[in-house]
Length: 326
Image (cartoon, rainbow, N blue to C red; front, side, top):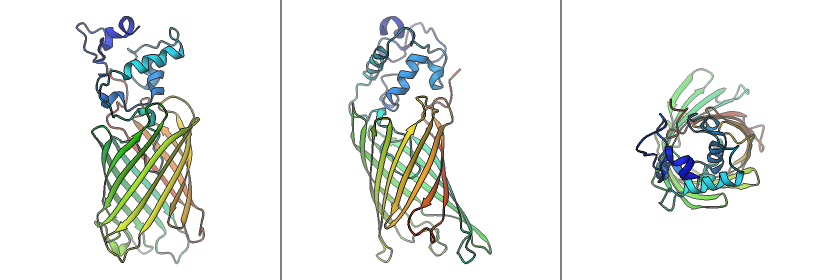
């Protein structure tokens, strides 16, 4: 079937290089493991069954759901995955939707903007309405690793004035130590280092270098995503207290398309404090390269002393096409 139906566009060897192209769009090079391992099987199956437009790509990729059984569609995906000849790339079946707080285990190529807004109605409080925005750049390194740079911006209301500052810049590396090939499951370890670039006396930073080793994991329970992460903050300055952070996320997609809604909730803890964060996520393009999420972080313990915060993100997976190429 591959030779008769697919090779005229994708070539026998999956490179997309044919002597006499029959389409205007240049097909994906299926031998390039960067492209063929990042997406889950469900996206590939949808493209084969319903055609390119079903995943936001070119209509020159036809759909074959009237000619193939579901088992044959899965067989095509297995065959196409086989064009990647390099072992060790984590399967895209472990690339779960990004939660708001819980660290993802899958290595990413993303740019993320994370806003947060909180309001304190108590007049005696140090601030009334606080706004923060964290810009995060994530880039994959090889098959299983990635690095990340995060720059936080703060705009806080001190009642008598507002102040805007850059906070503590964070640099991190992450490595996927385990990734299931058949059953979705992934475990990663990493180290984040926070640099004292923020103003300590205004509350925009911790005033010291902080090392933050962390672990992140994810799996599927039926149709539910389950992700968890844990981190320890180890400040160089002994006068700054250590912190223990832990997160658990459970969520589910509303459909199979990359731009479907995802509904979920997190438990977010820091030392003895605990919050619950219900949230929704939506792919903004047919390819899923752009996505947005919105949630509300609600304190569970010491509620009279804590505030409710609106949190979210705008995500760009920059190696994925935003839309179909003409």
